[in-house]
Image 1: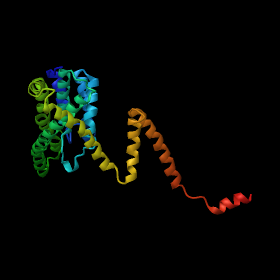
Image 2: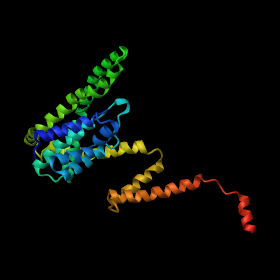
Image 3: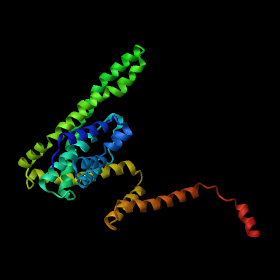
Image 4: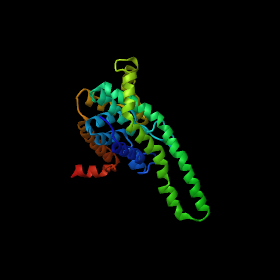
Length: 278
């Protein structure tokens, strides 16, 4: 598997659109297009191996399933995770002949994504720093009463920031990623300690993502029952995600009806007595 100029350009454009706050908007960009699961699908479509892209994207998504950006603070850049880490992982896995569904392949993808995502924070803050220039220009235009120029500062000039900090790094790294993968293969053999460490750490990182999600969702001990029930469906009853979603939908309807009954006004006691007399 190789990445040509056109493929690298498409992946770079997706990285631009998924930036935070994102040229595609926060909802469409960062919280949809930028998620590893969606990024894996797009990289699979672009590189011609959709099953591998989805499997690696799903593995990486578990780690960052609870990733948020409070106050603009980021611990990892999903743009780099989805459109630099996953393509590089796909190149490595295809060149080594690993099964994308294997624990080793997914562990390597998670480790690669975690490394690139941490380094990608430099790109995030680089974009925000360059945008400060456009904000000062917009403030000067406001002081001069040139309000129509604010559209330029808000919708046109940020393209320059994203082109510099999103498109160019993604394009270059993906285009020359095959050489980087070859270096990894030469200096980090599959049976070496370094690669075994990456595989092991990568297999443990999804547990961290699930733990962060539980910390945000669980507010009292009884909330763990929902998690354990879903785990039982998957691990013991071997249901897939679609089956678990259907079962969860049934319980959601039951819980909704119970809550609706609890909100209904109680029937007057006198009315019950009259009915019994009749």
